[in-house]
Amino acid sequence: MSTPVLECRQICKSFGGVPVLNNVDFILEKGEIHALVGQNGAGKSTLMKIINGVYNRDSGDILIEGEEQVYKSAQEARKAGISMVFQDFSLVPTLTVAQNIFLARELSGGRVVLDDRRMEEITQKLLDSIGIDISIHPRENVENLSVGSKQLVEIAKALSTDSKILIFDEPTASLSQAEISSLFSVIQNLKKKGISIIYISHYLKDIFKLCDSVTVLRDGVNVLSQPISETSLEKVIDAMVGKKVGNRISWERSQRGGEEKPLLSVRNLSTDSIHQISFDLWPGEIVGLAGLLGSGRTEIFKALFGLDPIKSGEIFIQGEKSTILSVPDALKHGLGLVPEDRRNQGLIMDFSINENILLPLMNKLTQLILINDQKGKEISQKFVSDFKVKCDGIEQQVRYLSGGNQQKVVVAKNVANQPKIVLLDDPTFGVDIQSKWEIMNIVKEFARLGNGVLFISSEFGEIASFCDRVLVVKKGEIIETIVNCNEQSLDEEALLKMVQ
Image 1 (cartoon, one colour):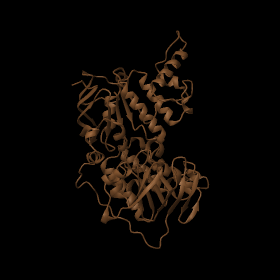
Image 2 (cartoon, helix red, strand yellow; image 1 turned 90 degrees about the horizontal axis):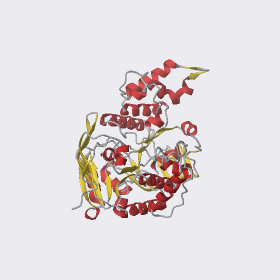
Image 3 (cartoon, rainbow, N blue to C red; image 1 turned 180 degrees about the vertical axis):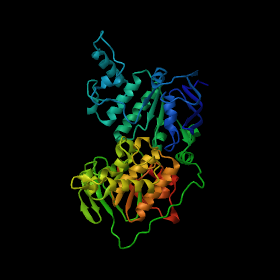
Image 4 (cartoon, one colour; image 1 turned 90 degrees about the vertical axis):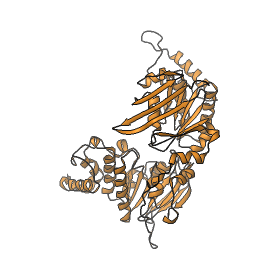
């Protein structure tokens, strides 16, 4: 039996005393495409960052071609033959393709002169070696390339270090169907050259087209590892979800009155990313958007909140046609947004809790040219108390709060502005379980007062248990609407199958 190109044995990793990986085994054969799948928080990224040298393991062994490895950085991992193609590109837009590929490894033609011609020649050979017909010039600035071409540059950059193992992290999330087909051809060509691939994806149907084997992580444990030919989509989903008996919380469903108007009506809304989106949101209702990464779920929020230009379609708020061209327009019409990236988009980290909560309220707190500081502090204190934000006081900088308490401040900032409709983009991602349920209770109370909520979550069990209706989003379109009545309630497994 041949020696695996990569073998992980009994890998363990904890953060702050919380186990993330628990005795995980993982084997990658030479020339194999091996899928790694699991729900958010299952431990996939942590395992890959350990393999790639970003994190140190607490215990366990990593062997490459039978030899134990003790590297402690991504640079040492690259020397051992491992490279990672990240979902968020690690390219510098203003540099050329060749300059990106040789960044920090430039070839010199003398003491102070770079050998640009040699680097461009090698870059062209790397691009040619990918094995498909592509028109990317080594002198082209990366900012001028399409998303698919940028990904090919990332692959060429990884190949430039003579990698034996390539890790792909959600590589199709931002690609068109044509670009996905090209990527699959590239990966198959790399396999033929003897390069081994670890392929991380939430698009489970893709792994059955592309991969040779699959490993499923759940709660930091390897729960399934089989050849693709010996398993099925249903078995993989069962392994991902598990039988979490008693873990589902029953949330009260809203009861819609017959005489009400929709708070929000969207008709045939289209942008560059979404197509002919139509739905209603009623008072007191929480509507979930269920879709995989790149499905268009976040792009619907961006269109509604004035972040993405609308090409066609109409938006009606409380029965009146509304034009939303910018964020101020959205705020004026009573919308609030809790963004996916709370640290970079939802908060000013060096500002206090008080300053963050009051940011959208400055016009309301200003009398003539003076800000009513006392009234502002009373508002902040009320929300800190009502939302159970654990802090040293409202003057504490938000960067020193836990992730769950930071997220409560983002929600508080939006609710304090008294919107009628709140868009929640993965509001419980990366927060502790206690903060998660507290945030969801806050959202339930907001809806109970007659407001409306659109809710995105990476955890399909959360959508299934929490939302009154669910819009299934795929490839920029709503393909199904599900009324989540108590008599015939959804579950995580059913939603996972729908979004594939």
